[in-house]
Length: 285
Image (cartoon, rainbow, N blue to C red; front, side, top):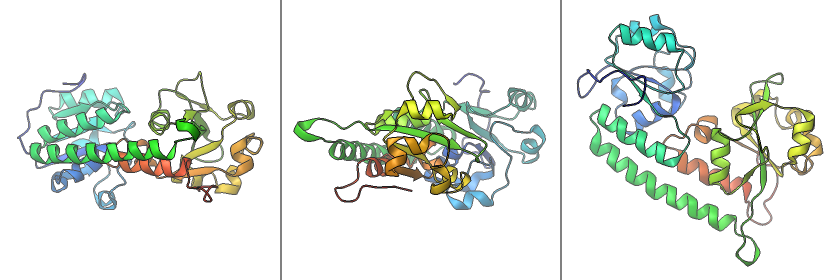
């Protein structure tokens, strides 16, 4: 059991479930257990029908009252959920709470799927889903290998800068120990921001020094930045190889960074954007 989790005391098949974390909510749907959902957090945007459920707020800034009001038999969340005081209050109130690891690895997705299968009494469904994910993942890895193949069997490793944007005044770039860095590694690319852990503010000096060949961001981040033209006006971006060639790729945030059941699909899309077929190179946004 993960640290911070209370012993499971709900029925084997909880009838009232709250899911905190978009990727966990996706897994609940993928396991066919969505009928038990009575609440989700604000990151639970896929599938679209999840947005029609009662919303308990942002995963990192939860409120005890809203969670208790839904009378859940089980709350599932990742280690990102908080604040800790709210989690302690839920435990004190006797609400069964299960904290799952949020590691950014394919193996972590498989582990979360199997654990959810146990918690939701969907073991056979979890086994079938894991088998499908394994097949799809291997297919995506083969696609990465094929697309990144250079002359004489060498491998291309493009330098990619991931930009996290919540608006023109809130722009950061991703270093190591991030979901974006993990995805770039799986795609055979090199994170252009080296020697930095986590996210740091975008500055002209950092961007120019990174010299990315591609810029990667989420579709939501691109919209928040004001679109492609506005993005390329951010300090330093126009001076990079990626900016000069307008090599910008945008993917759905939850698909790209959530490490949920669409992870194989996200890797395939990323590979297609970073290694376009001859004659189709250019901006991916």
